Image (cartoon, rainbow, N blue to C red):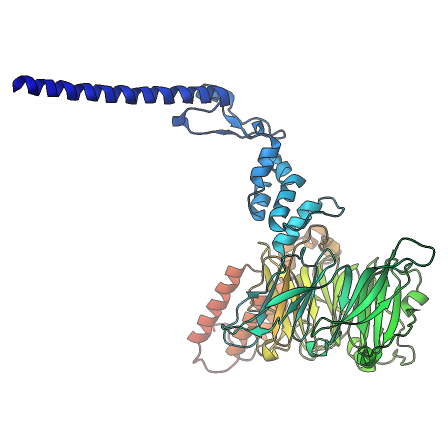
Length: 616
């Protein structure tokens, strides 16, 4: 029994020895494989971790690299093939690619290459195969498709949140949009117009959303509808497009001609078409006047304005007739002017030249009196007479309402003019302005919109976030958070998308178009110190004229005067809230001030009415 027990113990020891020998062999094989891998690839030891050589062609080698030779050879990202690095980076989100390109010169060159953006563009828009000319066509296309979106917020109801409509998959970015009574039309950068049907259908949450979309037409350059702000009047959609016409006699090939096609907004059916001569090429179209005397204004590539009169009451009748294009008075009397863009409403038209000049056409005496404050120079028999508007700088873009307008110059300054009955000019009072008046507390807007009796400004903060400011009449929720309106631009209670670029409110909701074009964005210039409003005169010293703190202090003096003129403590609190919304503060700072003012207002709710004292 003792001998058998010893034999069993010897057998178990042999088994343990065999197990240990097999484990040791496996460790030796793994160790040799790691040595070979380190010898081939130059990787460091496992206990040191993987180190990447932080060097690029412009930055030079990593400091202190000679002292670390004994710790193993680090890996350089430049050892990888450029195609492999581009392929790896192309799987990152667009925002991460942009952030990675800001780390060093090497990654900036890699992340800015067209190979990376071509792969990203194919991932975002698989149907997009070719791109046009440009400095970076694939980067522009990828960013356009990454930032595109159509958002809206309803004015009525208890729940007020930002919603996003159905995005057409085939759309190559969003260039323009136009809401009508029931639908929304979107024009992309390839000239395709998408028809978003039933854009205002109630959902279970009480919000509005677009249900489906179809392609209305291709080859479009521009589109327009009734210039009035109320979408009820937008019965027809006018589309400026390019179409291939069959070849004439003794000509085998076809030629392209510009034309205007008219569609019903309710069904998207084409009811009328106007074809122009192939020698005429247009780039923009606007409408002026009412239904029975509608005038189409067409801007050519050379900067000339032509007009065509259309009677919308006869568009649905099956007949054809020949119309005549006439040269507009602004191009006939001032042939040296080259118009860059136009804006219109039912009673007036505004032209901006390539040199930044502004010219008016006012067609009704009421609008003329609201815009200029007098009827002395108005001639009803010569309504197309262009009226120049003098401004100290070049105008980049504008917004035209029914009886007021807004202009933005090259320095980012906003000038308002016209009727101010509801405070829609944002000047802090309700006095009409017969000439452009600067709104000093607003600078460098992204977009500007003027309606019937209120105005909106889309601005960008220092942290690149967007906010929406508004002034004027606040009835029917036009200014969310300010139902009584405001005579100055105040921050509205609307969540603005990060890439919002344009806006258009209707009677029921506010639409905001999202998109970023790297080739077309307003490039503002820095205003010279000598032209800053509120700076001291040169006689007081050049150093004082360039003191930014003194300029800011002088800008705050009118605000203190408004607070001091308030007769009651309640009005002081309300005025201070409005002034806080004017100031260029961060969102957290504004929220802090507003909450503090609310707390003070509740704490002093029982204070008797009377003029504020220094102690209070």
